[in-house]
Image (cartoon, rainbow, N blue to C red; front, side, top):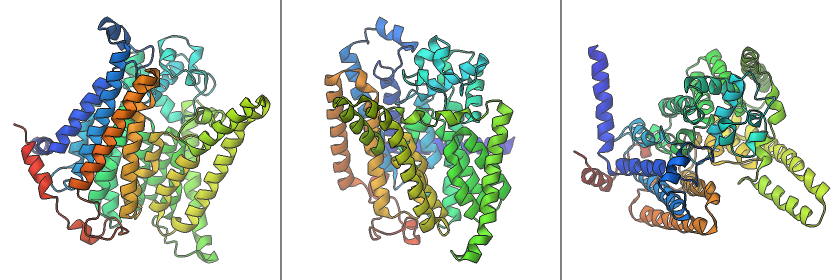
Length: 519
C-alpha cells in the first residue's frame, strides 16, 4: 500500500508541476472554451439533447451561433499557442502525459468535437443491439434518435469499420444504458486507451532507436490534432494507432508473435493498420541488402507477418459474427468532397460535366477518381518501400500513411495523424517537422470551421477573420519568442541528434512558468 501511495503522490506532483507552467494552463483554458463553444447549433446534430436547453436560453440565434464559432476558433488558437511554447519544457520541466491529462479533461464529457463520427459509431452499436449487421443495413433502417444524430449521408450507408470496432460500439451502447447521446460520448473510452498507448510507448520507441524522446513527446503526444481529433472527436483511429504503436514497440523488444497479434487486433479496429505489417516484419529481420539472396531470406518472414495479421483479423471477424461486409463499403469515405486532391479534382470534373449536360458521364466520375487515386497510392507505397522500408521502416510507415491519407479518395484531419505521429521517429529533418507543425495549425483552424457551414455566410466570414487573426498572431509570436526546433543545428539536421539532446529550456519559458504559477 505504501508503494501505491507513493506512486499516486508522485503522479499528483507531476500534475501540479505541469499546471504551474503558463502554456499548460492556457491550453487548459483553450480546451475548456472549446468544450463550451461546441455546445452550439454550429457543431451539434439536430437530435442532440442540448437543443431544447439552447432554445429555452435563446441561444438558437444567428448571433449566438456566430459567437460560438468565433469562440471555438479562438480556443483552437490558444491551444496552438500553448503547444508551441511548451516545446522547450517537455521532459525538462513538465511530463508530457501530465500536459495531456489537463488538456483533455474538459473534453471528456463534451459533445464529439469537429466531427459527428462518434454518433455513427453509436448508431452502429444500436443496430447490433437490435440484431442487425451494420455491414448489411444502414442506421436509417431504425428511425429514431440514434439515426437522427448521424450525419445525413452516413445515415444511408453501411459501415466501413473493422468488426472489433463495431463490437466495441455495441458494448458501449449497452454500457450507456441505450441512451443515444451518452452512447456517442462513451466512444471516447476506447479512444483514450489508444491515446494512452501512444503517449506511453512512442517516446520509448524513439529512445530505443537512438532518437530524442523529447521531440517525439512534444510533437506526437501533446499535438493539438491528437487532443482535439482523437480525444475530442472520439475517433476509432485512436485505438487503431495505439495498437500499431504497441505492435512496433513489441517488435523492437523482440516479441515477434505478440507484435503480430497486436497488429491483427488493430486491423480489426480499422483496416489501415495493415500497412504496419511491413515495419513489423523488417524490425529484427537482419535484412541486409536488396540482393536476391537477402530478399529471398526476408520474403518468408514478410509472408508470415501478413498471414498472421490477416489470420487474427479473420478470426475476430468470425468470432463477432459480422463477416467481411465492410468490403462493400470501402468507397463510403470518398462519397463526400473532402480536402483530398483527388476528391477536389473529381468534384470539379463532375460539376463541369453536369454543367454541360453530360449527366451519365458525371455519374461515373467518382468511381473512376477513386480507382485512379488508389492506383497512385499503391505506386507511392511501392516507391517508399524500395527507398526506406529496409533501412528505415518507421520512415516508410510515416510517409506511407501520409501518402495514403493525402493521395487517397478522402482526407480528413485525423487521417493525417496516421503518419504524422510517426514523423519524429522517422529521422525527419527539422525543416520538415517545422512544416508539419505549421500544417497542424492550419488544419486545426480548418477543423474549427468545418461544421460551421450551418451558421450562414456572414458567420463563416466572421470565423474566417478570426482564423486569420489567430494565424498572424501565432506567426508573430513564433518569430519573436519561440525557440526554433533546431536552434544550433543546421536546418536539415536530423531530429534527435546528441547535440540537440543537450539543449536546455529557454529562460523566457521558465519566467513564464513562474508568472503563471498557481496557488
